[in-house]
Length: 226
Image 1 (tube, helix red, strand yellow):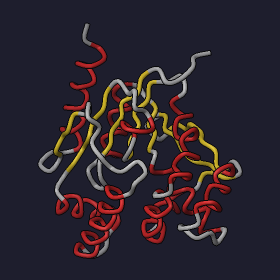
Image 2: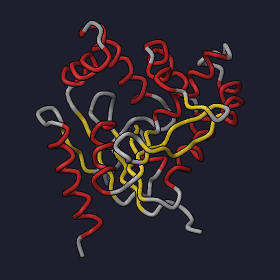
Image 3: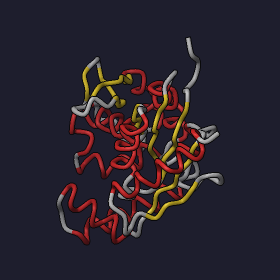
Image 4: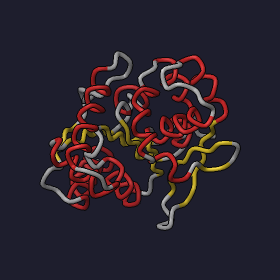
């Protein structure tokens, strides 16, 4: 049995930079499983809300982690992706609710929580080619990733994208994302930073397809070139 991932493409960056959309399309193109590490923190946040556990209660949050599991599923495009289960059932769209958005950064800020979720985040890539997206993939989750990308965009562009995605007032979305950026970059445990060996790509003026075209070229140069 193969031990560890066959190959990981790590894509990090702030909220709204295009990680999930670009990662999903890239995974389809290169025949990889898609793993969004942020989904694990969101799932834990939903479970904590159901159990009335404060997002600031590190010990109780860690106690909830064993109730979660990871699974591989096929999307409508027959592309494999990772999802988080509770008692064998997927969480669904609950993990993207506004009240989850308001709490997930606090949940993810705890050192013990991040450590407890690492095995779950790594499991879907076991023995597979994987595209893994998040905020500390290239620095913590898969520091040995063969390809590391840091996607970025201006706060204005990221807020526009998120407003189109979830609706809401643009100013409020910008303020929320600015707070999230500060929390993610300022936490002492696994802060949002560009890995030293990551390639930075600004996505402000690029479509998703253009971003993925560039990522595929980088992948081919790093992995498939003799």
